[in-house]
Structures are given as C-alpha cells and as structure tokens.
Length: 516
Image (cartoon, rainbow, N blue to C red; front, side, top):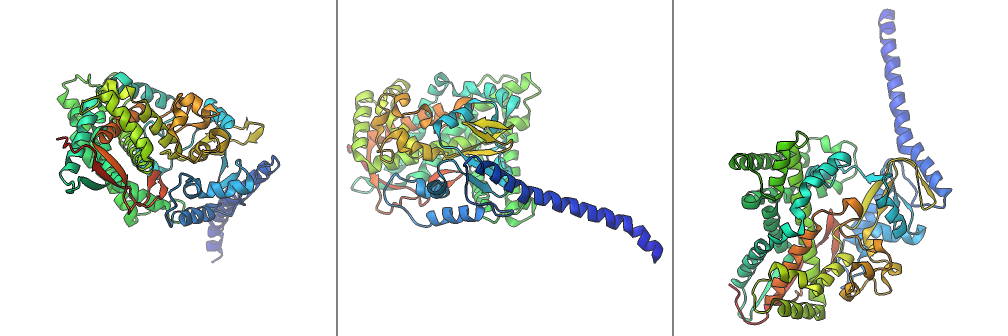
C-alpha cells in the first residue's frame, strides 16, 4: 500500500499543479484582467456597464436587443433605439465613448468621426478576427483576410469591379429585372395591382445577378449554393441566440451537424464548378468574371489555391447578395413611405430614358435623383450597422491610452443618425442633402460610411449601386407603389439590417402597359 501511495504521489502533485495553473489562468482571463482594464479606462474617464464574471454584459445586452425586437415600431426613421438598443441605452448613461463586455472581451465604442478616421487610417488597428461560425458562412475571403494575402487577393479580384467592366452587366441585370416584372404581370389583379414581399423577391433577383458576375455563363450553378447559404445563415443566427459556452461549436449537436453538412456540400459544389471551368476553358481563362480572374491567378502563382477560390466565391455570394438585396428593400420601403420622392425619381427616369423600355449603361449614370435617394437610404438604413477594429499594440487614440488587444466598436448607424453631423433632420428622409454630392452632405467626411472607409472599403460597392439604380429605374418606369396594410416597420439585425416581418408592398401598373 505504501509503495502504491508513493507511486501515485507524483501524479497527484502534477495533476494538482495542472489544475491550479488552469484555475489561475482562468481567473486571470475571466476576472483579474477585465478588472484591470476597467480600472485603466476609469482613470481616463471612460466607464461602462460593470463587467460580470465570464459573461460580461451579454445578458443585459441580449435582453435589451430581444425586448426591442419583440414588437414593431412606428413609421419613423429613428431606428437606433430598436436596432442598437444597447448602444442607445448605455450612451445616455456613459456618453458616446464607453466600455462594453462581450464575455471577457472588452470593446470600446467610438462614435467621434475624428477618432474613427484615425482608427481607419493608421496601421495600429486591424480587422478583428471573424467569429468561426461567421467565417464558415461568409468564407475566408476578402472580408476576413488580413495582411499580404488580403492585398494579393484584392489586387486579383479588383478588375471584376472596374466600372467599365460592370457596365457590361447592365443588359444582364436588366434581363433579370424584366423577367421578374413579367412574373409579377402574370398575376396582376383586374385593377392592375399586386402585393409583393420585396425582401424575398429582391434576394432572388440579386442571386441571379451575383451568380452571373461571379461565374459568367455558369451562373445557373450558383443557385444551389445560395439556397444552402441561406440555411446556414439561419443556423448561425440560432447559435448566437443561445447562451455562450466556450467550444460549443465543436459539440456534435443537431444544429452543428447540420451546419457541418451544409458547409461540406457548399464546398463540394464550388470545387466541382471550379474544376469544370478549368477543364472547359482549355487553359484559357480570359473571362473577367470573379471565377475567371481567380483561375488565371492560380495558373501564375502557387499562392492562389482551389481552396482560396472556393472561399472567395463564398464571400462574394454572401456579402454581394445580402448587401444589395437589403439596399433595394429599404429603398423601396422609403419610396413607398415618401411618394413625393418616388414621383421625382419617376420624372427623372422618364426624362432620361425617353421611350426606351430598359435604361442603357449611359442612362444609369445620368440618374442623379436616384443616386441621391440610394445614398439617403444607405445613410438611414446601412446594411452594416457597426464594425469592429482591434488595436495591434498599445496605442494612443485622441488622448486615450488603448491597451493592445482592445476591440473598438464603431456604431455606423449611430454616426449616420448623429444630429451634430447631419443636422436636426438627421432622422428624416431627405435625399436633397446629397444634391451636391457625398462630400458636402455631412459636416464631417466620416459621417457617411455605408461601405466602410479606407483601403478596406467594400470592393463590390459599384456593383451594388449599379444593380440597385437599374432595378429601381425599371420598376419606377412601370409601377407606382405603396406599403401594404400588413407592413410592419421592424428594422432588425441578423448579420445585416433587414425587415424583421418582411416588406409587403403593393405595386400598381402606372400607365396601363404590359411590358412583356
């Protein structure tokens, strides 16, 4: 017995030491370090809701967000209290610069445009690490890449989005929109009206355009991928609504297994598509769609692999679809709420396009009123309501000392609705503020940033704006529209800003013609 005890003792001591180390490390990460960070910022006059062991402010934050989204809001564009309820609430208590804890991770909210410009312009700050569940959904492409690999991919992909190249897509977009209008016309009532949930229809429309831009003649192959990504997005959203448990994404739960299966299927479809294009091209990949450019790069560089191409396609599919379809949805809702601007846009389209049923690429450039309307829509209802950057080292920001690793939360929606930047009518729909261009619309150049700022500005913004302008021009030519009685105003965040209860709109043929 004595020999057995002696033999076990070193193991017991080692185990005790290991447990003690883990406990000490855990206490440091989950308690002592957050308390030190709170004290560090408190000495600089920055406070926030108190940190709670392990969960931070997640419980209060989730409660406020769930309460805000539990019922629709009045027909108002003052959406900050509903969409970013935690920021709206704590800003009133602690000011616009305060700390908020996402578990043991601290985030410093920064809404001052001068500080935001510094964050985006200096190399001390980098894009934060994307959550693994989000990365699985949106792909490990331009949205999440950093450093040299990001720069290399951006250079490869950029020609896809050159304006002259995008103008070649005008007939493609026009065909997709007119096909959609034909389907609507087939079901018009005797009075020439139809009720449409534009949120659903614009997603279908954008899928068609994005797949053509990504794969050229192979666009049909992309539709199955969109369907799978939509399923994966719902699973991802469900996971974020659950209580935070470290490593939960690795558990073989029903939801996780479904997510893994979908991810494998998406990858399988994309690899198959890439290989088919590589084989059918016979070594010639001159096409300037996304897939063609990536394949061309892979021929001349070992740094671009099939996996890189797959991840970029996932990114383009997800970001392109969600951004553009949401822009179209909110702009249609705004024009339904404000018929005077709908009439102004229609007068412009009819004046510029004349008797042409479909605007040309030259017509689209001349639609100034529509550009103003789209910019105002992006200001009031930006697809991305907030973004995050991370301090790579100990830095000073506007006189504040920021420790390395601190995440900076930039509430884009709050900046877009800031009366100090936009005036007393900041929460009102007034496209005329963009009449002299974006540079003169706001009192600060960083007051408007729907597509980001600096080198990481969204590469697809020209495609999104071209697509949106052309789509709205064609619809405005053919229909007048207003909100359906069943519409409920409920802007909500699920990755991007979207209408929680859909967007039913009643379209009425404006001139009695059937454009088929």
